[in-house]
Length: 185
Length: 270
Image (cartoon, rainbow over all chains, first blue to last red; front, side):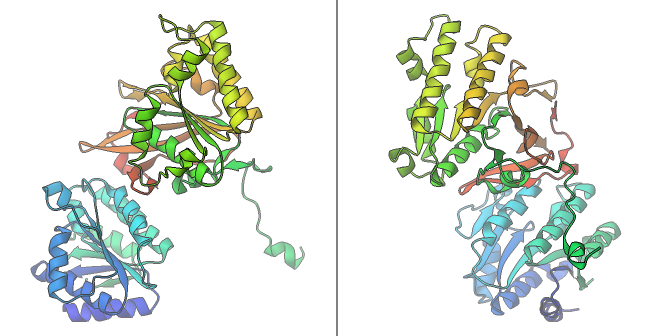
């Protein structure tokens, strides 16, 4: 499944009234895929929150700008920049000190959600695998469960991105149990 | 059974009864934990270790009350009120006009002591001093019409009382008149962690007299410190007893349930 097909499936899933999708992308073009996906959603006039555990938000912003994406209603939760001593001065981004502070992700989504102007909103979680570097599988599974159900209550369309090659059976099963739809996996 | 009876939901609250009037904290997560707020007139012991966010929570409680038209009062025992006022400027949710309009009143206990003539060289109150101090607190609450009060910290006051009996008597008397005035109060208790156990107070008396105990602390997760909050007791309210994570944000305190498996390695609370 290429990125264009994945984007189409996501739009279809939104139109079907789903609230939670797990999306598997191949490692070879994972970053390009996430940027393309966000660009498509922003082009459909959705506002969103991009949670990054894989690379600094400043890099993603640059790539989205190069892709001519409309960033007027996009905000970031960044779990990378503070950990690696990167740039932490950006009005559209909330920075989390450490990737072990999983609950802070939920808090920051709540804070940013109030800023979103668009009626149709999304949360793009890039990526679940990024968190597994710092958290044990049992903690991660609990977090996914809490995150997924929080997003359901908030009625925000949420995408949990995974790197296909790094997702073991146990994690895949937890995602399948939670998600309305599995795309690209 | 009539059709309309079927449509009526069954009340599943095992306590039944009528809920007490609540003092809404306007701190979203806290009101959810307390099922609407603190019962009006309750004395709540806000116990916690250093840096756990006790003063910030108490201040937000007062500021939110003041913003909603109540008269609120903060009695500073451990630091000068001028320093507290300058610290307040750093909170995004603070508004200067609340102080100017008399909605938020900040008093310095050392100034109160000076005026009462109860400052002792050995740092210990006599029974007469204690009466004078209770009288001063009562006057402040009565004359200003205070509905929210914070004493920061009750631990520092207790250090000046001669024994545990006096501490119990002081807090009991304080809670009696505050309850009569319908003044909801937070007494800040400084605690320490010893052998991975956190107590509710230094003297072990305050929690027995208080109507509520809210425990704040730090949890170590892979070397990182996370702030936690747990309501241990709250008379007159059905409340959550789960441990929550709190964060100090520019718009105030934010609260979210703590991940259960994420508590491994955390400090034990008793």
